[in-house]
Image (cartoon, rainbow, N blue to C red; front, side):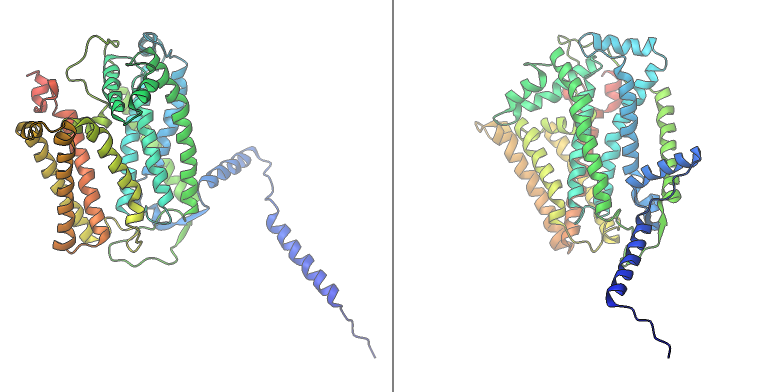
Length: 473
């Protein structure tokens, strides 16, 4: 009789373990390195791309009308600013009056120096607009809610750093426009309680804007601010991937998609990003060829322009100073606004309408209603306050911080509370609709204040029509 072969349990276990180990080794074994130089370069490029992007993405997130490519455009602008900024450093001296002379030499003696400065200037200004629009896009599509609340806060801090980068760079040409804009902007620091005077002296390098201020701003502009921005950008990109990528776009009333169709990042996403980036580079270069960055006469502390205005992105804040006590306008209102924006994911945390623009069709209507109300009420407040509202005269000997500060602020808060009550009770709005309404109202109010400050304030910061200002009447 033929003896049947037997296998011991130990042999079976060892064979299974070896087989599993072989499979693991095959999975972990790196792909063969290409010997062709072109193929090797392609592999390196693909690896870099896949460090920033997942290998596959939901096809729906490729829709331009959902993200408008704003996040990628912001990253492109930062790259352009770093590149042009490093080149500008080779022809710049951060001392007064040499800083101004450096700009003149750059414009006249350096090949493409004027174009380089124009690209840097307009890219920096465009970055503010793009960052704000990106924040609005994230809000209006509900992409700030858990688990993305940490990235929402990162985004807000990055927006503040972008404003800081523009503000510190604004002084570097050392012309009249920059000198007096920074003088107006830094004067707000003195209203910070307890440490305002010390903080102002630390930033300015003395009691007023001077050569020491220029050196401080230069150091901040090329070191602390960009380094902080780079760190937060890296964290921001990492959190996008950790939180599951972009929110999936949906139409109003459409149910969430459980298993969306996915496509490979290369080439579908990369092709779109490349076209988008090249298009914007062409737009910025073309614009910079025909429109020069502003440059007035050399800074003169003894010759103040009329009116002296802050940089355009702080004109909404300067406009508030005309209607409220400086402490309320420069400290209280911005602090409340910043705290409110940061707390949004914790107030409105439901994800039922995530990925839908304005939450729903009704939400879109409410946002348009809020924009209209804000446009009307904000404009009416500005005109009324300029023409006949005089809280200090009406309230006699009351401290101005109360008569011109907290009382007008209380009235503004009461108006917001009444609007919220109207949406809640009168229009039967949900919590997210109330948040949407108030956010839109306040965002449009800031836009109105900024536009009025830029275009409708003439000599003495009087309210005037733009064509009257242009004609000098």
